[in-house]
Image (cartoon, rainbow, N blue to C red; front, side):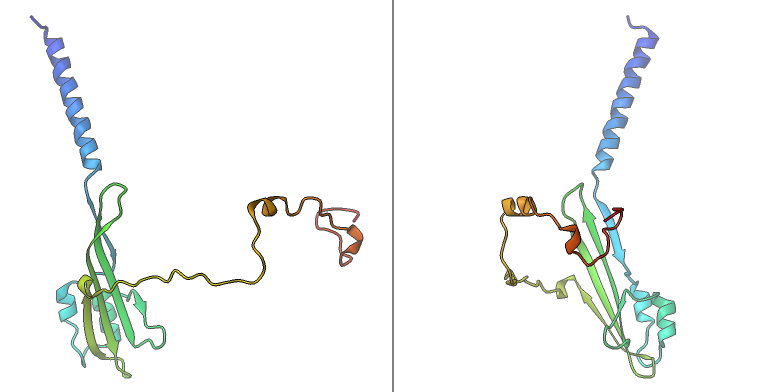
Length: 166
């Protein structure tokens, strides 16, 4: 026959084990990460071309993620949602780019929305730009200055910083 203390120890041990398993399992859940500015559809719908001004767009959507480089007539609101499991690469769930174009008087001319499906894959160039000079081996780089000494009298007449008397 077990004593009450022994039964309590068994149950407490089981509860601690279950709590630890729950903690470990919750640490590996997928986390949804929101980056950038993802405006709501109601906010986007409230922007009327020809009527809404720049300051009103800034009030409704906030400041843009970026502004056109050449003219400040185009504002971009860029945002995405992604999940990441532990240390693996993140998976993009949703990506939206809202483009708001203004006319010369500062009112909205047009709004366009691009999604993840509108994106295009860009292939990087693998070419290497040739440079002048010669390539050094690892040994030449490590031992290149061994035996080279500067003559104190051959400089520009200024002593080396931090070395008195030269």
